[in-house]
Amino acid sequence: MPFVYDENAPFWEGTRRHELMIQRCRECGSYQFYPRTNCTKCLSENVEWVKSNGKGKVYSFTIAYRPGGAAFVNDVPYNIAIVELDEGVRMPTSIVECKNEDIKCDMPVQVVFEDVSPELALPRFKPTT
Amino acid sequence: MGSLTKKAAIVGAAESDIGQTPGKSPMELMAQAAKRALDDAGLTKDDVDGLCTASMGGTWLLEVGEYLQIMPNWSSSTQYGGSSFEAHVGHATAAIAAGLCETVLIVMGSTSVSDRKLTMPRGAGPHGSDPRAGAVFNGRLYGLGGPVNSYAMAATRHMHQYGTTMEQLAEISVATRKWAALNPKALMREPITIQDVLNSPMISYPLHLLDCCLVTDAGGAVIITTPERARNLKKKPVWVLGYGEHFTHDTIAYMPDITVTPAAKSGEAAFKMAGLTRKDIDVTEVYDSFTITVLMQLEDLGFCKKGEGGAFVSGQRTAPGGAFPLNTSGGGLSYTHPGMFGMFLLIETVRQLRGECGGRQVKGAEVGLANGCGGLLSSCATVILGKD
Image (cartoon, rainbow over the protein chains, first blue to last red):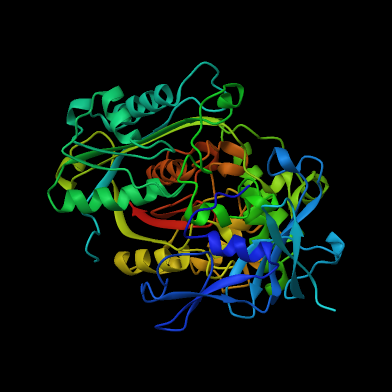
């Protein structure tokens, strides 16, 4: 369970609604991820939450053959990816509805949400059809 | 001549016992390395008035000072991973040049392998860090584990963008092992082939076991001092000629370009300060946490063009007898790797420039480059060293 507090809560509230929320600066227009109180470009505090269209492409990925923690012992081999959204921001994630060996860099993907528990939904990405 | 060129010299360098050191603490290894480095310099602890160190702990610098009973007038504990010790060389040189201190001990110790058997309290975040901010979005929710997963993603993208192959990455492991075979202190000295690397277990695609560094215990230390003092010691000074540093991110998803390390900037700054070109470097020691780390640093330091690292290391060009002597100690891949290897790049560069390397000595080595690359390809510090 991620540590949820004021700065990042709107992101996790968004995933529970199956919406991918990122931030945009009202002053300079820059998008950013992960959540921050200030704009990473101009340091303005005038930052708003906006809904991403959830589309992007695989920037890179790996297939883990050793678990990256006790919770993943039964999952190996599994993929871990970085997706670059159309808005230009990148996020760590994983690719679903696709065999590990079929994942390619720059492959177009779109967000899907996994309801892990009533409190937590995790964004993952599947190939765009 | 840049602002720090020949403003200080490394006059002592040594490692502690390495490999497995059961029952020892990091502090014991550090004290051992500090003693050996001071002996190497012909100096005593009383000569030291500056101290640099880095570890995972919060006020580690104070603990080290107290343990060694060094009460410095100047200190620095920049900690951005395994490249921290190259940064310490630059910072110490600046401090010496500014007259803030005369003789700095840069020291580290780690019992990475022996600590696996211990149960110790850990901090809440990934490195005992704050569990908020970026720590929530670092990829651990998706099973991103140790450094290998992050470096593997750099390799995947490099292969995609430039056509780099797993065979080319394996060339680096094979060549480095050949250097290790010439270093009596190296922990892994059995020859390996490209096929051995490709047949070793896949750890995190596209990196195999033999693309990964060792996990060992080790400590190390270097002594750096003023030009005046350096000229009057038992061994010839190894001068700081150029220095540069740069860092870009903490975790891998936020690396601006996953195929370009911060060495692109730190290297350029170091060459500019030294007033030297790539052709002037006789021996190169770059951080080899993984084979991909090496390949990208060679490109970013300008030894070849971006994307041509695979061709550059092919045909065992970096092995003993090859055109480009690289990681001559056997590196983190085959000599030792206590979690932060940068210290050992400095020690080997000093030894090469002094002509102390026996069977692995690079003939006529006058200028050497050590490039640390720490964190998750996060930070690089480049030190160019030369003899008189």
